[in-house]
Image 1 (tube, rainbow, N blue to C red):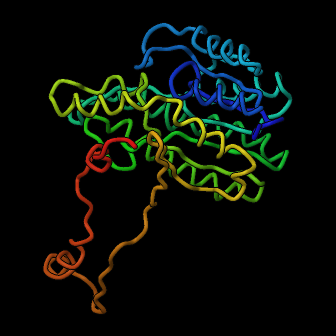
Image 2 (image 1 turned 30 degrees about the horizontal axis):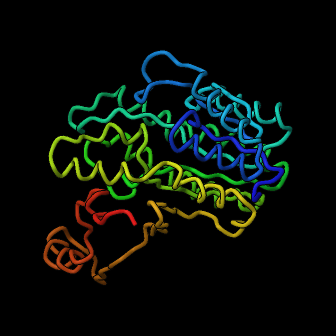
Image 3 (image 1 turned 90 degrees about the vertical axis):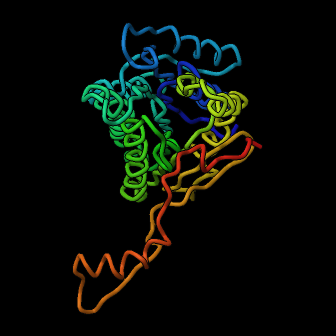
Length: 303
């Protein structure tokens, strides 16, 4: 019962990773606000309260306490209503899990402005809006924990996902800024880059033998594998963990590096473009990072 007495908001908790985290937090003793608008994977079409209500029912069947919330994360006022739901139902807020997301995959030179904005609004702006709303009760009580869902698509790279990759890497920067600005109030902020077969990964193409093999590996990883790390990061046991990026993959847990200088060159007389080409580039080239994608880096089977 690592979260006994705590109150958590989990966005996008109507299914997949969000649902597993919400259920795990409830089983760990937290009272949970299950936020989900019940939209399609692309965010287009009608919304429904059913997915969130189903997660609440699962939690209650297992002896936990939860309420459903259908406000969108992608709007300032709506996000504030999510936090208000927690305060009205349970009188406090201790944990925010920014998990809500949609996909509008498209190759970069064909991506529309609407496809870009829709994904950035939910993932990046939504994480900011909900986090900003929660900052007020966190500051007042002198404690709180954020867990943000990033992705190896942003940390490493992927094709056809410039909107999603940019938003997910932006979340890492947001989390680090929250960690720096809010540590004085006893508030922590960390990221998880999850591996799992869920609705968010079900759109991965599976046409070529290589693509089919990759999808088969993902299908072996259930969304529940990400929940223990989220519960830990939200708990007091992680009180000294702040500003970090983790990735659970089946039974593995990775800690990601963050951007730091890897090589440097110096010339006391200064540089010209020609001198950069002649001297700086050869010296720096050994430190270049390849155009890898997530499956290139994580090329071995999940353990």
